[in-house]
Length: 430
Image (tube, rainbow, N blue to C red):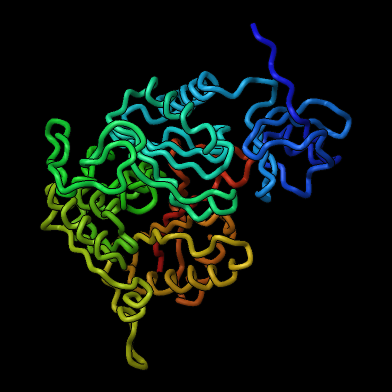
């Protein structure tokens, strides 16, 4: 066996080692005591505490506030075998906790101890998203490991996130292995050619860049090249089914409906009528097609609209008049209202506004299912905002369920950043 090569050493300040030992993979610029020799950006370094005790190995990037991203607590070689082992371990978690899922997140960055790497599986296609320099430098090894484990039809890169600029990286998007939607490796865009054959029993996609994704037995046509994020909100897969259990016989309003995740699940579970709201005309069109595909087109309607404006108009009444409640179930699943801690105040005002108006539209005994995907707003703060809105609306609610992200987005408590999605279901008592 060849000995491991010598590595530059990053010594961390007293106290910083505790975070690393607890499992947090980020070492910020302020936590670095000194470096024994100048590391290469994107290169591997070993990390030691101020007493020279080994803490692990990770990537170095002098251009980032996160100077080191820890990969392992011991000296190991970071190569294709390393990535294959880590990805297989991550896959085992999904197989254990989501055994029936055919589409899910395979690797969730810090949750799977691969900081800066996301891999989503959409049926027989993988979507890769890289946000750190160290991972970007080892894309070849990562792709080779994914091909060996999954033998996918194609691997698509969707590294078109703003966070890459903080690592000194340009955005990158396209097919990096196999063929998809008329695109091959290095293609910039797909040609207008027929889509690849869909699995048996699944209608073919209309857009050559779409794939038909199965979630809880429902089919969603999803654009993997130009769609939002990597395609779908896979972190809500379990919650789609849980909220649907509350919708039998209900008139449902789905706010921020996107491709119809909650709406279609509600309709399939026996909702009498579902109305979805989203500001994206493309998302609304796709949701309508998805409803027809799943045999619930007559139950579902979708509207392209600013949700805030719609809720405001729906609850506007003349003086001395009351809002007439219309819905048995209302779902609020907005995008993140804040990406920074400094903007939390504005975000809370936004959350309060939509809850205040939604509660006015909810019938007595009805259910409000609501979600927040901002890491900077924790569950307690989110619930406080909802209760404040209920107080101002003169409503009394009973909490009947709590929600988190699906198991393919694991939460590591010692890494708070891995827990971002939280939700509740409240019944309107009076």
